[in-house]
Amino acid sequence: MVRSSLLGVFWGLTVAGILSLIISILGNLLAGGLSFGGWWWFFLTLAVPACVSLGLAGYYRAFEGSGRLKLWLYCISSGFLNVLFMGTIGAITASSLMYGYEGVNVSGYLEWGPIYAALFLPVSTIVMLILILVLRKIIKSTNAFN
Figure 1 (spheres, one colour):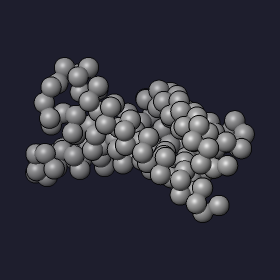
Figure 2 (cartoon, rainbow, N blue to C red):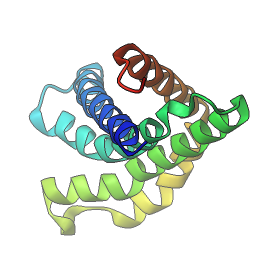
Figure 3 (cartoon, helix red, strand yellow):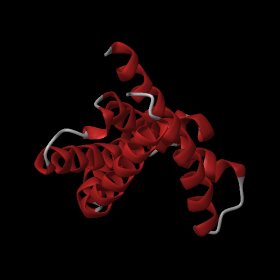
Figure 4 (cartoon, rainbow, N blue to C red):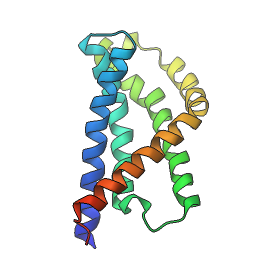
């Protein structure tokens, strides 16, 4: 039981780390940026919540035995919290590392972070569902839990 839970966390963290890197680079390219600072900022804000969400999903083996309601509630809550983290704590931290704390509009991030999280909830919920389904297929294909 402990071994399979740890393997699930490992797969969740691995998938989240790789996807965070890919999404960060592609997001920066689509936004028209080619600088190191742009994708690095996006990676710093995305990696932590994605690793936590998919690590937990891996711990519970991507909610394989649970019902649809539980899976959707997890996707909604983790999608909201991921965007909220990215828009507040992640953005403040990444901007502080790049520009220094004095140059960061902390009140602006704290004010608009929850608004962004609510506005992007439909998109972030679907993205979390897709990521969990991909993680579930990876875990099933490795046969590490049998």
